[in-house]
Length: 534
Ligand code: FAD
Ligand code: NAP
Image 1 (tube, rainbow, N blue to C red):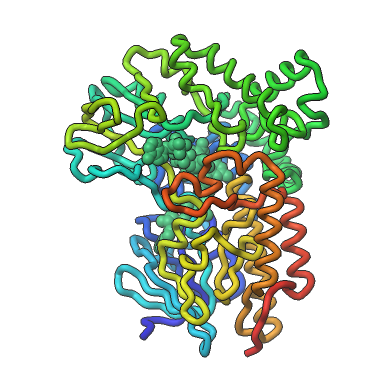
Image 2: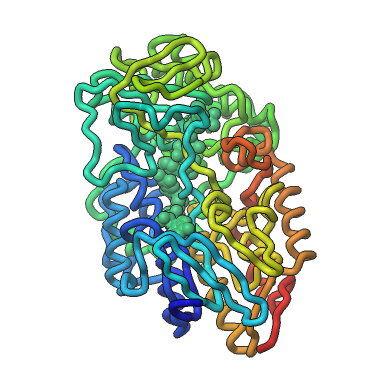
């Protein structure tokens, strides 16, 4: 028996859930938002580790839906820190009076579709049960933390922290013997700052990543004013770009220019300090292994230039995956940190992690003792937050079971067998390959338009057809296979989680083509969807 009936339940109050709630209100729909965290912000609420900041420039990594909001907010740095981004999200929540419909510290545990009634029953870990016509999953692509799959974590007698579950009052590493496990973006951002404070730091690396210098800096006086004056053009340029970040497009293959031109091109891109700058230096870097190797070798040479000890430099040089096929990192002083006498690097490929012990951790070689362990070990990405909710669609079908061999969606927005349920930045959409706030806004706007259409046409439910879903899954797969991405053991492929299906999950076709497809589907009466009249 439901405690309350509403038009829509939104799960998650990060950037996606907040904007969705705003749009639902504009449609006049009564909504409830459930958020496991204690406040708004999602990623920016949870990931409070030292050095956490965005890797898409803040003037682009910000909402575009409200010109007034754009005009009243000033960013202070090129890549804002987590506290600054969280202040921004809080400002948005207050400005649009969003909190009153959000229930915090409440996790949605199950959702069940009732075919007779065309509605969802949503249950939470606080015992509340709500019925809703629509469910919108704003649960995040990178929100379900992943720990190393070794035993003993609960036996450790020191302090331990996951980067995405960081204490709100910070961690004092002064004088401590610290281990960081993981060298993805979270490790790369936090390691230099932890090293500055800790007595001694040991980094446990399984796979080295490619990282570019962020060239972060305070925004010079006048930059925000100029940006505000040109926001409409800047947003258009972002929307028209492949990844939501305007970039000069390459014209040549890396293999058709001579060494000097190639080197100068990479130098220029390296100097930009942007996420996709180097991979977009030539047309074929993500398509051709030999072309990619020229860029990879350029970055390796940069690492060797900075790191004094050649053996350490070698360990830090990625060789097992093409550049760009794992999400690259943007850093400040990452490689230079390994020149400190109190920072050590352990290669977990040579000596894998075996267990966490009461005093520290053990590899196949020896036991290391620590006061503090930091798990920078990432997420069950893209599907984890969804499959950890017991979601039951038509005929009681479980979403987790349906996705056992990899996620299946239509446009990353809807799932066959799960009517009236939408996924914001779901698998099969550009999501994590893009400036995510832009992809979030595109999805939220599309969903809002769809809900309006249903009401305008007296329809009670909408569901992706199996055929449309099959076609889209096949297309996502084919486009992915055309690139080098499937060659990496990345979280894009589900490879970081033991037992997870290996499937390239995001859509790599680029934002403009993707948006056009979504808009076409809507313009043609929601082609590929099946609807039921009231
Ligand atoms: P999230 O922010 O992940 O929010 C999802 C929310 O749903 C969470 O608060 C979670 O608690 C809640 N939730 C999940 N399951 C449940 C449940 N069952 N019940 C209740 N609540 C639930 N992207 C970029 O484009 N640029 C960047 O610079 C960038 N930097 C990043 C830095 C870090 C450290 C990380 C981890 C990710 C970064 N990302 C970045 C990706 C980032 O996740 C997105 O940009 C964006 O913040 C996602 O917003 P969201 O609302 O979709 O998801
Ligand atoms: P991640 O990229 O998945 O990195 C996790 C790290 O932990 C990897 O080095 C991984 O090694 C290692 N690891 C995992 N399990 C391990 C085990 N059992 N033993 C040893 N090592 C293990 O996670 P993340 O760094 O949190 O970043 C995830 C994503 O969030 C990023 O790619 C990015 O999209 C986003 N993010 C962005 C920023 C930013 O700069 N704005 C910051 C943080 C996160 P393997 O590579 O071998 O699996």
